[in-house]
Length: 235
Image (cartoon, rainbow, N blue to C red; front, side, top):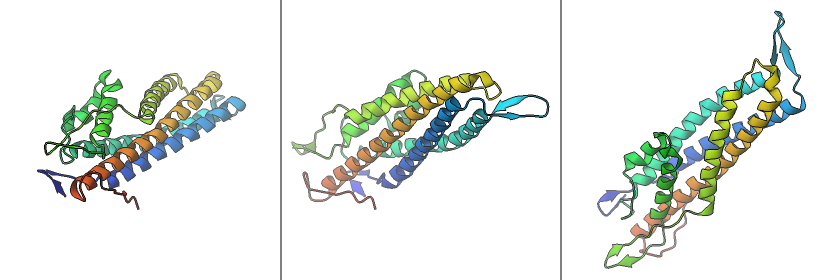
C-alpha cells in the first residue's frame, strides 16, 4: 500500500523467517555449549585409530556442529539483513524525516571492518526511532525525534560483539587432533555458545519489536489517523 508517494511493504513475513533463522542459530550454539561441558567432565573420551593416533570424540563432534552452525548462521544473517533492508526502505513511506543512512549503507556498514562494531547498531537504532507509532502532527507534517535505543537493543548488540570475539578465539585455538586442548576448548565453547544464544534471543526481540512498531505506525498513518489503536496480527 502507498502512504504519501512511497510504497510500504510489510516486513512481517521476512521478520518471521529472520527470527526462525536466528533462533535456530541459538539452539545450535547451546548444543555446542552442552558438548563443551561434556568435554570438561570427560576429556579423555577418544577415537583410537589403527595407526596409533587418537582424536577426541568431543572435538570431532564439535567439528560436526561447527559445519551445521555455519550452514545455519549464514542464511540467518542473510535473512536478518534482508529484513533490515525492508524496514529501512519502509521509512519514507512511514513519513520519516530523520533517516541517517541510505538503504544501501544500512546494509553495507555490516561489512566494513571496525566500522561494523558501531555503525550497524546505529542503523538498527535509527530504524527503531523512525518507526515510532506514537506520531505527532505539526503544521501538517509528521515530526520525528531521534530517540535513544531501548535497553534490550543495547544488550543485543553487546552480546553480539562479545559472541563474535569468543567465536573467533575458539576457532583460532580449536584443533580436533590435539587432545591437550579438550578441556580448554570446552570452556571456550561454553562461553561462545552461551553468548551467541543470548544474542540470538535479544535479536529476535529486536526484530519483533521493530516490525510491530512499523506495522502500528503504518496503520495509524493510513487507517483512523494519529493515535488510533492497532493490533498487529502475527498469525
